[in-house]
Image (cartoon, rainbow, N blue to C red; front, side, top):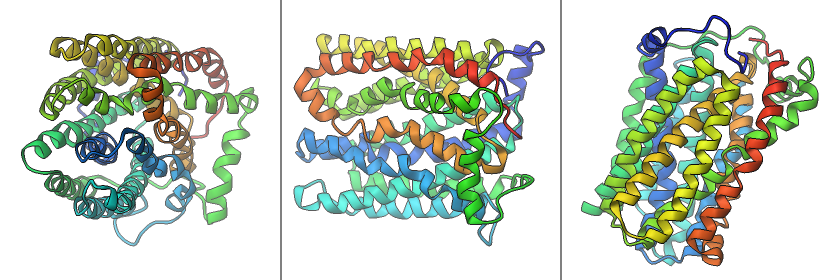
Length: 427
């Protein structure tokens, strides 16, 4: 897959019809399974801890429980190399990780947001993140292996849509459920939803095993790395540049998102307002952004899409600066959230498609895990001090900093896409 539009690109009608294929529906539903657990250990957990009176600095540190999303490449070779006894190389691992995630959510529901229970909350949250990250490894590999090159942009857009539906249920729905029942019941409800996701795994067809798949664990560890850094052409010199781009492209947007829930609560919004207005209204904007993004990529190519979508993300972060000065105003909040979520849907779709295009089908799980782990660094490691940054800079200064941090990633687009056009990735 090249990063530029080809001469014979599909029509809008053909692209829309392609979205109705069965494998596209599977990409959508698997996106839901991936998105559901994520915010249960980030924004929803932040709200629970805030309500329990835990201080802001400690809440910021809880972003470290997301380390498995950054370190998942360490165990991804196991998933490329070994198949479990049931359901095949990909679906067997999906079944196991989904069941384990549900069990960890039940364990989290048994804790309480008090200082004496923070260790238990940390361990349970870490288990949720570990099994969820492991599920992501398998689902990302499955999506890459089950669609053609021409369908990758659309599949990425639908995956992002499903991911956002899962996030909506977990964050918006979760906060509303917690507001009217309890956080414990909410986490148990989300565990039941994860169990329901197993039905998709049972119904999905197993992708064919690629030729020359790793036959030993050593091959599964070493060959994906050698393949990435030893491709033909100028890519050998630009491989590190691509890694820097993946790290920086969404850094500003990600760091800003890490503290939005405490930000809304400090401005005086209730949990129901956050759940209904921020999450549900913003959800539709994200769905629109991801859908439009997938279609636009097929028309204008990846390079232009990365530029346009990246600039939109940068501008959207400035909206939080304005909101910090406006204060509690539902119209202003809806406007900021609508644009921010639409831009995020655009950027995430292009980003997911870009990373998928760089992987070799022989090592899909490992290479995609390496790239997406790097993408998760801002959310986990660089988001840890966001609580202190917000305290030190104030909300306007914090979000302005996040806006400025988006610029380096934009400056790398030209070099990365030029190098990517010259690469040769075996399929």
